[in-house]
Image (tube, rainbow, N blue to C red):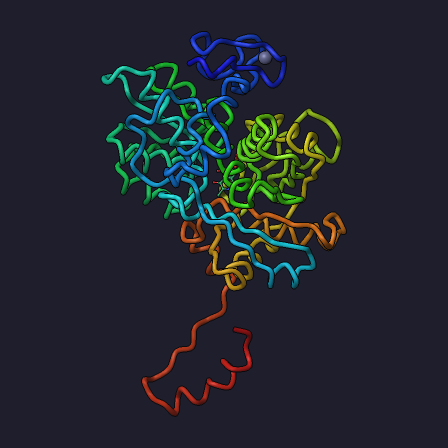
Length: 418
Ligand SMILES: Cc1ncc(COP(=O)(O)O)c(C=O)c1O
Ligand SMILES: [Zn+2]
């Protein structure tokens, strides 16, 4: 593929050709980054061309994605998700602007569809028909997105999840026809088993922080933010962080649009992690690139990770952007699920609502300026984890179908907020 120059290791810098390596650095096992020939891309990919582009999904950026063409891409609408401005919430929280990038609207209801779409297209471009089996380990969303997109194209997929993954996510997998292997262990155990299985059986491995093309799909959210804000960027972008692949993907997107001259300024990225699943946070605070394992125990199942698989890339994104990391507790997240949904109309799963909890904390700690514009990346739908949401809500009124009964509770309804 002419537009890709090299796959460069983010740890040791070794460069590889596309044919030389599939997943990680041949010298040190580090994660690889796709480097394009940006001068070539600049020639045909312009802001004017984008204005005329009729694809209202992530494929509008195909010129800067690792795909030869758009033949056989999933027919599902992935990406180009809504970006909402919520001035009321911004005033209440005490910041200049709040933008919400609502990736719950993707086909499988999470951000991960962006990555799965690109990796599945890579499978179609590089594997013969009879060898097309794709596998992934996942805390839930990468899996349900891979199964969803595979279902749209009739591709066999094999999914490794920790047995503790929420029932709605497992149900999604089974509904999409995935072969689901529930591993009696953590996400990290599922990850390692998936790597071994792919090596043994020749399946294509979509694992996050292992397959270099997941980041390529994820960067499209940054492209959309630039386009939807008419080539401005927010001052700060709050991103929920588990493995660190989303935040590093987002950063790559902003960097690439700056490189090809579409934007002048870059945002600061803020990594939001859960208190017991905060390996990136700890390393950032200690100013080290050595990432120590943590317990990973949190209700935020999608960002529950002992050892982040793309932790170094996440740290680089934080450092280069001049951003910072925030830790939130499960309690703060549960409050955030309810509060965010009731103030914005966007129902986020705990891992995604964590960014709202993180914003409130960062504002309290004076890490966000009062005039800042802030974007919250909402990566997964609250319907994926109803049990957690139920812990944060009040009870419904229960009455006989009778006006007098209704009148008894009306005053309490009128005295509540909206
Ligand atoms: C809803 C949601 N938010 C955030 C993340 C974290 O992404 P990453 O593991 O790339 O840091 C995930 C990953 O599974 C997710 O599903
Ligand atoms: Zn290396």
